[in-house]
Length: 120
Image 1 (cartoon, helix red, strand yellow):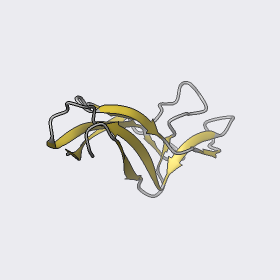
Image 2 (cartoon, rainbow, N blue to C red):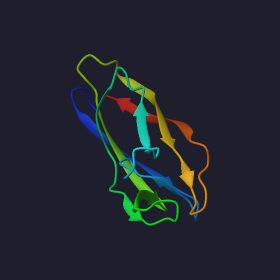
Image 3 (cartoon, rainbow, N blue to C red):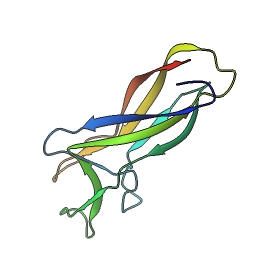
Image 4 (cartoon, helix red, strand yellow):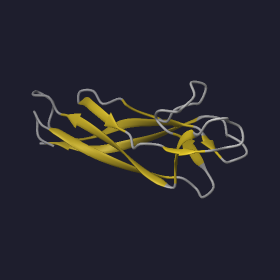
């Protein structure tokens, strides 16, 4: 990425067979949404785009639940403002989610990772 420009990073997540997570926009307020966050400074996060969830019917809910299953991608747009130091860096990221099966949900977790970025 060059200073003054915005670049997109697509992150692919894969869930084990039989598991799902709530989407980024669950259909009930008590459900824990999937959330991606960044500690990107001095870069700027211009946006995070989540896929549309798939409505599934489960015994624990009277209405369909918006979920992700299998593999899915989340896209982040990062900008390198003028004056950002040039060179490689790792941008720390966190994915907060709750994995569930049709019968139970695991405790919420936060996955931490690093996104390698080079500013030229």
